[in-house]
Image (cartoon, rainbow, N blue to C red; front, top):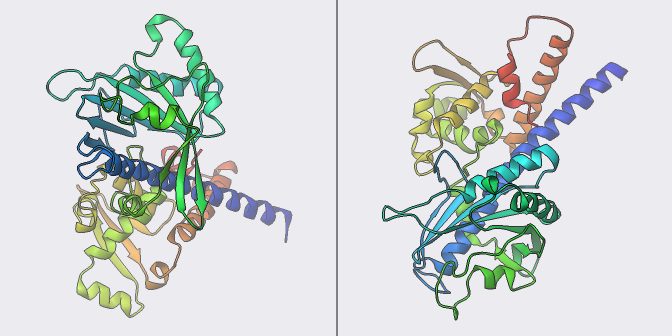
Length: 363
């Protein structure tokens, strides 16, 4: 094998890893938010085992004052918990951006139509970066008063644990750092005899949130969180299942006879499919996934009509694969490396523009 080909294969493998890592990161975030939603409902929902009826709503797609935290849990006390999930807490300039985001959450004014509600902010970070988060937050607490948080910001480190006997759970730990805070007192309930958030997290070495059947079902029914997904994830979890559903009997027979089908769809047809009912992805999410099919994947073409129609080529061989994300990431990676190589040589034949490169060149 020539050195040039070996370098090319190495670049392809590198891109594949980045595609799959972005997919996995988003999938893991969905699983975590789903586990949290199931945990809140299990403890304080209408049929909760601790104190039924304390939880009024768990909103995993909040939009408030132009901000989109990962969830907001509303309690009847009244009290609101604003939640953010970060894989890691960054350092330096990027860390300051993370702090700025959390401070903005602390300055929200959540309400229920009857006035402003008290709230706390909780951020879940990898157990190995909770100290970084606390150090960064300490600078915010001791900085200029105009830029300080206005509500407690609680940092919880977490890790996913697996045991053959007891299944899977997230182990959440609060640690006493200068920049870490406790939840307000009282928070979800006013009765000191009932376990509140401080009793569960601050007053113990750790608290386990189980990945139970309800959490797994939520991940399937709600495969999105407030953060926009990578286009590859949207294709596998949203667009392809919708394409199968939208096929008519003749198209399914053609596909079953191992003959390729060119399915013509619009973005709105995908959005209105029965299989996505209740998922309600933002139009931009499906739009980017369809554009990803056009370029870099080359599995669809887009016409100039309004609304645009996409002609998507579907084959039985393609969709009988057990791992779509691996197939699609490899195909996209090879096209991307080829296009970047072409651009590097000064060629102008590439149909992939800078905006499209940013779309699938994940950080």
